[in-house]
Picture 1 (cartoon, rainbow over the protein chains, first blue to last red):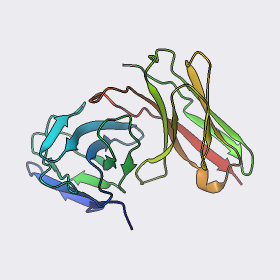
Picture 2 (picture 1 turned 120 degrees about the vertical axis):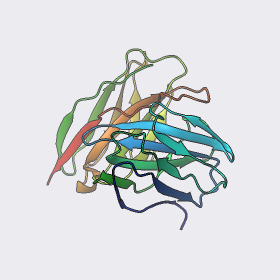
Picture 3 (picture 1 turned 30 degrees about the vertical axis):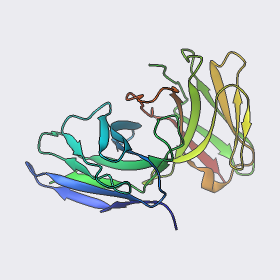
Length: 114
Length: 112
C-alpha cells in the first residue's frame, strides 16, 4: 500500500543529545514537509522540501535540520540547540511542490525529553 | 498573513448534519480554503478545499460565502468516526508560503 511512514512512534531524548526522526513515502511525491504540534495546539511548519537536494525553512526551523538525499526520504534531526523539543512531530508529502497542494500526513512521532 | 477563526468546540448527534463554520475576513483573492481533520494521536487527514465555488466530495461539502470572508464545512450525516479536530486554513497560490500554520481548530464531538 502507498503511504507515509514515520518511525519510531515514540522517541526519548536525553538533554544535549541529537535525535533523528525518520519519514519515508512511497507515493512518488515531489514535496515533503515537517510539522511540530504541541499539546492542544495546531501544527507549525518546521521545514519543507520541494525536490531532492533542496529544502527551505518554515516558521520554526531553529534547532532543527533536515536532508533530502532521496525523493522518498526526508529525515528530521532535532539538535541540542532546540531547547523545548517535547512535541508530536508530523511528516507530510504532496504530489507537487507548493503548500496549496493537498498534503498527506504520516502517523507522527512523539518525542519526549528525559 | 490571512488568519482563520473557528469555534473551539461543537457537538452534534449521530446521523445528523454538522455545519462547521470558519471566518477568514482578511482572505486575499487568491487564497485557497483548505479543511483537514485530525483524530487523536494521528496525523491530519485532508477533507476538502475550494477557492470560490462550493465543492462536494465523498467526505463532505464546502460552502463558501459570496464575499469569501467565511466558509462552512458540511458533514451530511455525522458518524462516530467523524469525531475529530477540524482545521480550516488558508493557503496562497504562490510557491513558498513558509508561514503555513494550522490553528487550534474545532473539536467536534459526536453524541451517539
